[in-house]
Image 1 (tube, helix red, strand yellow):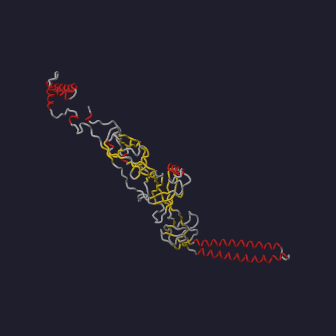
Image 2 (tube, rainbow, N blue to C red):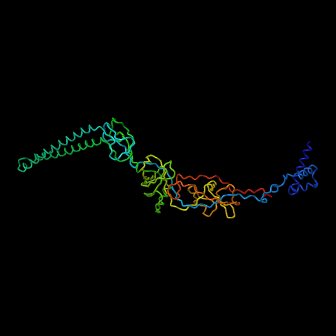
Amino acid sequence: MSKVFKAAGVAAVGIVVLVWWSGGPDKALSLASNKVPGLSGEAQRIMGQLKADSSGSLKPASQAAPSKAGGAAAVPAVSVAKPLIRPVIEWDEYTGRFDATESVEIRTRVSGFLVEIHFKDGQQVKKGDKLYTLDSRPFDRALDQARAELEQAMTKVNSVTLDVERGKPLVDRKVMSEKTFDDRANALREAQSAVKTAEAKFKTAELDVISAIITAPFSGRISRSSVPVGSWISAGAVSNATLLTTVVTEDPIHLYFDVNENNWIKYRRLAEQGKEAGVARLGARVELALPDEKGFPSRGVIDFVDNRLDLATGTMRARAIVENKTGLFSAGMFARIRVQGSDAYDAVMLPDDAIGTDQTTRFVLTVAEDGTVGRKTVVLGPLADGLRVIKQGVGADDVIIVRGQQRARVGLKVAARDEPIKLEPKQVSSGGLSVPVGDNARFPTPPPMPAASAPVVPAAQTK
């Protein structure tokens, strides 16, 4: 049995040597018809069977399955397009919070029992409208007392005045001593001072009576009442005084937001150039929207910019004033706000699908006139109507592969067919094409493109 295996092994080695020596399977088969000297009978028998086999399994792939193109590999097909050139205005997007233009906590300057509430919780009030009434009887009594003291002081002044007038001729005739006359004059001055003191007490008592009725300091929306009727209301310092309610003004309303340092520098540069963009100048236009709104349907105007950057956050606080006639905006609400970050310019735009990524670089694949694939590194900008703005890297005349990048290799040729670039419907309310960038701009990472490795040679090109 061992002799059989040994003979088969010798035959196999002989076949391999014959194929190598003859220059290929075909020549080896042709030689097999002849009795090649040196081969054993078993090797001659195996070569004969291979020659008789019609499967052609030893033939090269190019001969076993010839292509329709006469052995040439099929050229991959891709979709190409030239970049779209569109006018673009860049916008920087932030998150802001509404705050009332005027806000006040209603407290009383006198203490007393609350006897009446003149409003409903949450209603609109006008300046001067009654809000609360305190029990004014103690203040009325104090006012009456102050009035009586004032009248008493004025009566004394009249009496002393007459004494002084009667003493003048007596002093001239030396009937009254000057000392007595001076005493009468001093008594008059004291009486006049007492009148002023009584007048001050009367005005204070009168003010307390007025303060027992609490009115709205300005027009706005009032909050709920913090105290019910019959409660004791304490006056005094803010920490001790009873908080009754609050009133805020909602039309117009303020919107505060923070600008990062880099954008603030950009806005200052634009202001130095006399550009309308940015928030570095008062009166600049901004657009805003609530979280459930598409686009930016509302408008505002910058009316305040802080005088220094916040050291903790490195941001500049800015404020816009917004009309709120419908009362849609309320103090404390969040809103998306965008600021014009550039003047209009013609931008080169491509779909995100056409952009590949290679670690930290972004690139596109180009097609030359002869169909050869090339590669260009690009610098990305913001999104605009579903397309990516290309800051650097390609021009308007470049032909870019927009579909089928996986089938393309740098240096090889492709069959290109034109596919026009389509714009998505605009999501902005203002005229022209505008794009949000800045703190909240995000550049989605496209699917990774195959690296430009050595080309794969089809089987038909093997030797």
